Length: 196
Image (cartoon, rainbow, N blue to C red; front, side, top):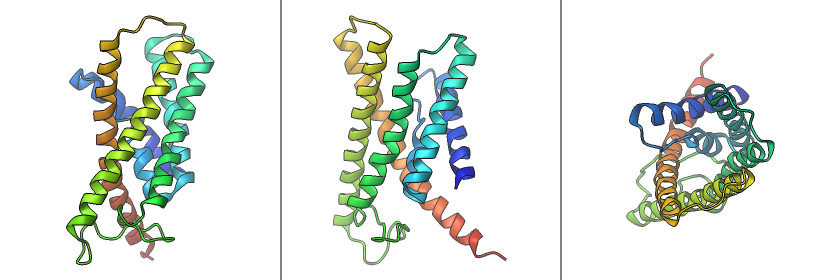
């Protein structure tokens, strides 16, 4: 699980920088694998992935921007990524039926099976939207705390609205991609564990 969490952290860090560099659009998608690994392997795997993602992003940012990072801001960023795993895990436990997880086993059921109904699909949609908004809220609070820790004042309301919209888009994509990647991860490792 640690190897998978490390691979997820590398993919998270690289994805964020590639998205901004290639598309010049500040949607980082740096939490997709935190969410996927939390859904697939539980809280410990997601927390490890979140911690490693934060450390890698810090290392990449420090190398690219060549500045001495400020400890409080880094600590906030580190705790934010771990909190994404905790909140995702809580949603996984609380909304097991809506997210197609078996109670207790945490193995995903097939994405759509005969016992599924339209109401379960709609429930899943709303649960994932709520999770996206909650992660967006955590990310927004974290961003504001990091800005304050640098002593920056006078952020324009239009900039705050812009950040909220981008965070909402980013976290929504991350949550949906993370859930479906978790299904693939669980299927892959279930098959590979049966090999001799």
